[in-house]
Image (cartoon, rainbow over all chains, first blue to last red):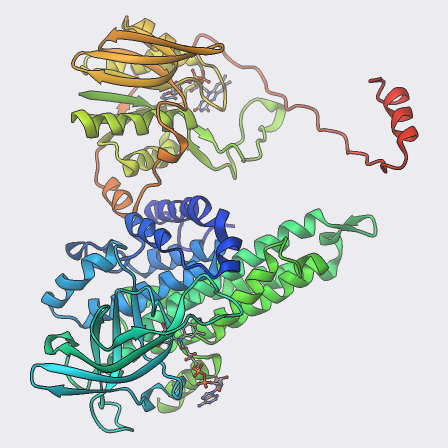
Length: 383
Length: 248
Ligand SMILES: Cc1cc2nc3c(=O)[nH]c(=O)nc-3n(C[C@H](O)[C@H](O)[C@H](O)COP(=O)(O)OP(=O)(O)OC[C@H]3O[C@@H](n4cnc5c(N)ncnc54)[C@H](O)[C@@H]3O)c2cc1C
Ligand SMILES: Cc1cc2nc3c(=O)[nH]c(=O)nc-3n(C[C@H](O)[C@H](O)[C@H](O)COP(=O)(O)OP(=O)(O)OC[C@H]3O[C@@H](n4cnc5c(N)ncnc54)[C@H](O)[C@@H]3O)c2cc1C
């Protein structure tokens, strides 16, 4: 089958091949080792920086690759077929931290932070979620108050990707009234700032090579010009950032689903029971057919949302739909993929169990499936 | 320094190879093509030399439009410009003749070929090219350094290495050792996007004749199924090896 949207697009083909070759050489041999030890392999992100993967959407003027969502989706898809954790970290770095500065920063702010982010010299974090407020992010407790020429941050963020290793974090904090969507603002906080620290790494079911931890702000003072955009716009900015981010989590789901499908397809042709390959049983072959069809459907949705985004159109609903569908598909595919492996799929000798563990994040991160349905139905009902 | 890297566009080593009806020609359907691995070592070496001494790296392939993706990849990896000799090659002397006709007036200091192509495995083009251009030739080349107008080369020989020096220009048939596998470059995003705008000249053939014509291809016979005999049943194993396989 042709990769979708790669026909007559030799550059996209070349990018797919490069991302595939990179994943095979720099990621595939170490996947289980990193997973078991919960290693966040910083050197891989530096190597991805040299590839241009760490600043996919950033203008070359700031050291980025200056590409669009078509190329970005392709890279996340290929990397995630091999390792969901690396795919997740790559997506969070590009879509959240880097993109927030890219989209809402001034020229000076972009010149200050983007070159190091886009080259992979540093990884970035993005903090919206708190322990008490996940889906209801707008109810956050972390505050920022202006004191002379400095903002003073107080509070904490939870489940933040790259909270420990990230050299900078974009943080959303309350600057106004609770319940007011214009009561929050976005700031850049640099590692090493007094009162700013990362917490203990979460011990997770899956995505174990992607670092997740808390961020603490204890009377943390940052320069006034670390505010991104206007005071009061932080939450609105975040929702716009998530519109793009969800496309990348959908691409992450797509990659994991393809990886799980490929493993199951291979295994079903090798494993024999009752004197024939199990792929010869219709019950197994039909599982493969369902996987392939659903993967095709989610790729079409993701690519469509990406192409709308590339045209500068609003994609709140389309990206929510793509993320919701692709992540639920990926969970089903990883589940059936493991089922096709039987008992061997339950062991760590085959890749099926890792896809099964990693994939569950996709229906949770950057808005749960329930929250995506809220976004979609709200759009329908407000029309 | 002007360097020409001759690139053969070959099926990926993992591709399943089929022939068209009657076994007359390779069926390219569904086959992924890559830069001939020997040529990739040569290309990477050429880029190292350029980085050290300055100059220009040109890649060339004799083939139809389908080889352009391979040339673009070479450009994405770092070559400066590409040439496609427009035609379908059928014989190594024809390939060498066309390459020589193109290269003769271009003033290349170094012409890097692969030791052999991994598809037709002729191992003929580099030597024939050197002969047609009346240039020195070093095959199985695993080391190459240039100082001034001289090249210091290493050639793999049975059980050892031979050190050779030669005045430029020179033709080599290279292989792994020119650079190591870990030095091969995956094209990055900037390389891929700039490759789009680098020159790729399509040049008509000079009319070199093919001296041979293949009349057919056959694949090796499929291997028979493996039979597993339990380790507790050694007598049966010995009996089968003796009576059926007749190897003991
Ligand atoms: C590995 C990992 C990495 C992450 N990285 C980041 C990061 O880099 N930055 C960041 O800011 N956050 C990050 N997160 C946080 C993530 O976005 C949140 O976990 C997610 O938004 C859900 O919030 P919660 O965990 O508090 O769940 P809750 O909001 O407590 O949800 C619990 C359940 O209730 C449901 N629910 C909640 N509200 C409703 C409703 N209104 N209607 C119906 N059902 C509802 C949810 O769907 C869910 O099933 C990460 C999380 C993980 C696990
Ligand atoms: C019947 C038949 C049909 C063929 N059909 C085709 C066909 O459809 N398409 C096709 O591409 N080839 C075809 N070939 C192969 C072609 O004729 C040449 O033999 C081939 O290009 C050189 O192969 P070789 O194994 O002799 O090269 P070798 O001498 O083993 O190659 C060594 C080096 O020479 C250089 N080189 C080789 N070929 C080329 C080239 N084409 N351009 C630039 N540098 C080169 C490379 O550096 C390579 O590493 C066919 C051959 C036969 C016998």
